[in-house]
Length: 520
Image (cartoon, rainbow, N blue to C red; front, side):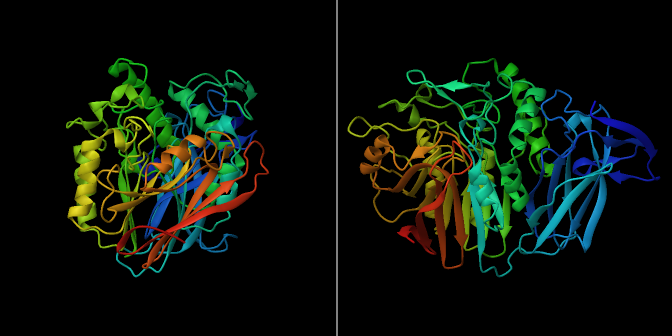
């Protein structure tokens, strides 16, 4: 065990515990740690006009099964200040780190002023965490001149270093949106490549993750990366998952191996618990068995409504055996779902009611229906919206019929950058675009990459709705004003070491009231 324990009594009355759970315990463990308990850093998320969630996890020995902690609750003090030196502390309190949640804590800070930055930190025993920074949102409907944010995701640990996270940490952003694939669940592999063996820059600890202990270990290994910690500490995050937080290409109660759904539900429950434990999420996203409420909405004054979507949990099975099959009619299944009926109704209602200049769908899988078989029969990626033609058309027709002009879709998953325009049928992109889509490349998944893959050059040539494509690693910056939305694609020349050079590969813009892309 990496700490020494004493005990003390709490004052009479009820304290607020993790995620706001009421606690009344006679004693909590107080620690003298042998190792730094804040090795996974700090994070903030889901900001509101009066506050945000702040997160940390006591984890002095991150890769050990018990993470160096005893199986008992422990008191953690938190502070929020108006300045980085903590000269003016505006909120403080005590929270309980519980062993049932891997000694993670989620504090929903309230009572702050809108549209301004704050600084936060934690203390356990005599140990103090690093300092994080987060900005509250403007009041709903308030006149807002600008929102500037970043988009990240797909950060396979074994594929390279997180230089992009270190770079985005210096951007001074209102928030960061993570579209998913925060971890990868597979076993450690030192070598990759069958015909030309190569050595991964880093290697996962352990085998494929199935249990909550194994998922915790995987998150801990990722979060020990100081570049990722810097990114979290720089701004509040909005997080959603894709597939690798649980299992590759899972949807609904189906995994890629044909596992009994009742058994797969056990794995999902473990994965969802670990996901909640390591993300700065609100109590409303507390896992309930193999279910977790992830879709939600954020508002930035009168400028931007962010609709955060979950395209995994309620989706029907991928068509065409999840293969890029030409001529497979499964993509036209009238009963197919991507969002599920409840989430779709929630989204449509939010779009209908929005008073903001811009609406963004912050989600995981590409909506552009690119023909992936140039020169042959039409073929699509069945794990994207293009493999689900009926729900895809339903979404785009709703946006078009309700004349919701300023919809921008933010997507990940593809490990490439894309900028394109959305039509009901990408094979016949007639008339004005219905919406615009920006796909953000990976932080590391796929390795160093190239400017454009030869196969993607051929695909772009037969898909006029696709205006830009690039296959390097990096992130996206979005600069939103009442007049226009500008997206900047930031790319690295390499990630096999931490000295990659960051440049701007392209800039595209959307003018308010005019869906479609222009070069910025």
